[in-house]
Length: 440
Image (cartoon, rainbow, N blue to C red; front, top):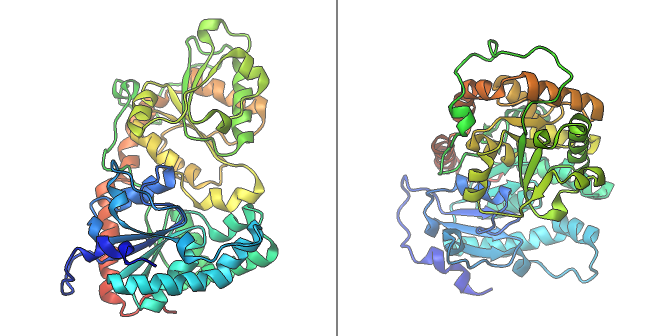
C-alpha cells in the first residue's frame, strides 16, 4: 500500500491531546465527494471538520474533484484492501465481506490508521462498513462511533441475502452496536427500537438541513398565519380544484409501485378536467428512475428534467404547490420505513412547500408529520381512496397556512449548527471517556 494515501494526514504535526477534534477515520460505502443523498447527509455532518484530520475508507475509486473540498481528504478505497472476488458471485462476495475479507481489510486499514494517528472511527450503516469499522477500532484501541441510517439486517434481507448471510449480519451488527463508544440513530423510532433490541441507548442524529439553511416558497410566505385547528376547510365537493396543481419530485421515488399508484390516483381525479385544470408533475431524476403508467404518459402531465444541482432543484421546487414524498408499503421494507428517516423529506422541508407524504401510517416520517403537520399523510395504496384523499387535500385543506405554523418547529429538529455541535460534543466525549473504544 502506497504511503501517498497518508499524505493529507501527514502534513500536520501531531499535537498533544487537546480539545481539538480527533483525527477521524470515516468508514462508509461511498467516496467523500459523492453527491447522492446519503453522501450529502454525511458531508453536512462533517461540515467544518478540519479536512486534514479526516480519512475515508470506502468502496469506490479515489475521487479527485477540484470543485469538491472532500476530495482532499485521505482516501483508502476498500477495493485496494480486499482480495478480488475470483468467482464473480455477488452473494459469495457479500458473505466473504462479512467473514474473511472484513478481518483482512481491518488489519490493513488499522496499519494505515495507526501510522496516520487516527484517534476515532466513524462507521456509517447499513452495510459492511458497520462491521469493518468495529474491527478497525478494536484493533486500534480507539473509540468507535456508529451512525446507523438503515437497519443492516433488514437491508441484507431486502437485497436478497441468504439466511446464512442475514444471520451473520445480525450477529456482527449487534456485536458492533454494543461495542461502540457512541451510537447515533437517524430517528427517535430507530433509537427506541435498538434500545429494546440491544439494551444500548443512542444519540438521535437525523439528517441536517445543511449549511445553506432553509428557504420558503412564496405561497407559504404569503399564507395567513392561523392555527392548524383553525385552518378553513371548504365544504365537500365532487368537483376537482379550480386551478392547475403543480407537484414537484426530487430524486428517484422510493418504490415504483407507490409512485404509480399516486399517478393513477391523479388520473382518476383529473381525467375529465379541462386542460387548464389538469396537474403538472415535475421530476428531477433520470427518466428510468420514474416509471410512468402508459395512460398517464399519454396525457403529458409528467415532465422529467434529469439530475440538477441542489440549488437549481430547490429553486424550482419552491415554485410548486406540493412536493411528493413516497415510501414503500411492502412488508419487506417495513422495518426500514418504520425506523429510518428520508433525506428527501429533510430537503423538502428546506424548500418550504407542503409535502404530500405518501407513506404508511407506521413510518417514522408519518410519526414526525403527526407532531409537525407539514403536509397531509396519504396512508393508502388503493387508487380510488387515494384519489378521494387528494381531492380533499387540493380542494378543501389549507396546507400552506398549516405549514407556515408547523414549519419553524419542524426545522428546529434538523438545525444544521445544532446537529453538527451535537456530533462534535459526542466525538470529544467519546475520546475522553473511552480509553479503548470498540471493545465489548
